[in-house]
Image: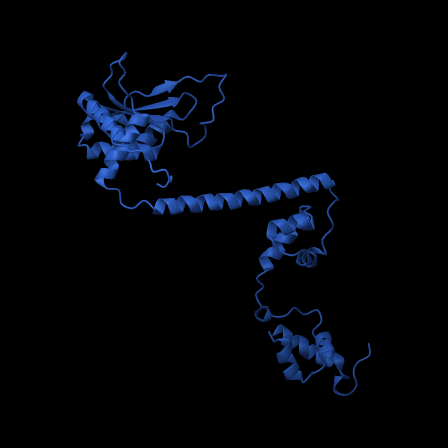
Length: 290
């Protein structure tokens, strides 16, 4: 190997010193100043094969992306697919994975399907984010609920979901059935507003036989704040094999039936309130504004 003349002639001696300094944690600039080596090519030759100390490595914001890109490439992903997944440029991906083996070439139709699916997944995520923003904004529009608000909502809620008396079937019972825990909470708040004592409330679970019956009983008992022993005998619905049920999974807990004992007078008042509410409604303005 030919070395530079003069003070660089003792290359091996300088290399020993440079390596020792490198291993001691010196940066290239510190080694240059220590050994008075101002030729960058020779300086790099002196420390060749010696890794730089950790403190000289600047953090790279793309380190995580690089590792992920390499992982995906090893799984056989193409540049296009990695770009869609990570949102970085193809040039960066090429630089990061150029030492890895190329994946087997895929059928162009399969590539197109994968790309289309990825675009659709992105579109769904954008739509869901927009959906959540709309819901959050709407929730902010509801301030504190007054007793009057709760009273009117409760009347409408009962008339929509509660049992009703019929001329051909006189049943003046206050009976309410629902599967939505939020609806159940609101209904119970309405009954409290009306002054209905907790002792008059009777609870019963209705659920399909294939579900977790005991788990559902515990769930509804906890929701309404009573011991499971307070629940009446659960109504088990038999499964119809011809019916494809969609209300399945861990979140399915059937329905809760709430009955107010000695509720004939209360039922008549509810029906009267509903009649008054309907008769008090005026025709909405033609502008269609709320």
